[in-house]
Length: 408
Image (tube, rainbow, N blue to C red):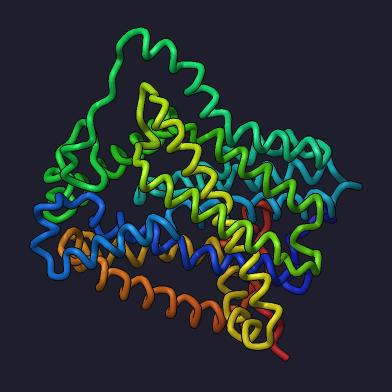
């Protein structure tokens, strides 16, 4: 086990770091809807904010181009990272798996701590799903893609199996016609959520965050979130196994196909309307969930292939090279986004929760991203890892890792 060491910066595949950095750009725009409280604010109050209709247009635009797509990209890249490490250490597999499981356990602890302050955390889920993904490490590529498709579609198969029984029992779902807010909880009014974040004590905010976290994981049951995560992880593992991220292909046909299928499916889902968390299922809602999942996967592929195409140009390479440090510090930047945004929006900071629209919120998110790009590029001139990456590696290998470069 002494021979196993973390990946050195020079050994990294740059396009993967570019994609990780790119994924972080989308994730903050996804999360800002919840950090800012916009998604929890009743429409009656949102209408009192200037440019209400423009804010709503931004919300639905983000729902089409951002929501779930960048978390999908992050999930794929997580699985790709495992494949690269696994394929590198096949000769010392037993020792590698011990270390990798310890690595996942530490990520689980980090994710658990992060979840306590931000219910939208993904690290806890990623670590749990990755433990299962390890079991598929020796599956052949052609079977990997079959397993991936199976788990992505499994929630729909379950809905179809339940459908005859729910129709026979006469069960009906709550109507959505009287929706008064973008995101609501069955056991709390939107006003109670907003008031807690705006005027509650730190203890009350902490308790509400746990409440939201519980509901998030409960929502994975009707939506099939855990199955979909596993399917997407296996998709990433499959793509790595066939050398998708190291081929010099132009991806032109995939770029066009993923754009057409992805956005057509996503927009069709929005036109049809539905609820990914609805139970018992209905046939229209099953179709809605299928279109939503299809759009999620194919739009993600469109983004991946677009980045591939852009970095092949001289101008694109110059622009995207600044995302490499952001991607190398993906864990740190992800956690820093949470820290910065809760300071800006929660009441122990600037207390902007539910008080501003998406126009200024988007400006804040862009400013955070610019600062992270600058910080990451400066930090990695002097240090080998981001601060949280260093902590993660040190705990994984049970020794204090060297973080600073040697001064010449």
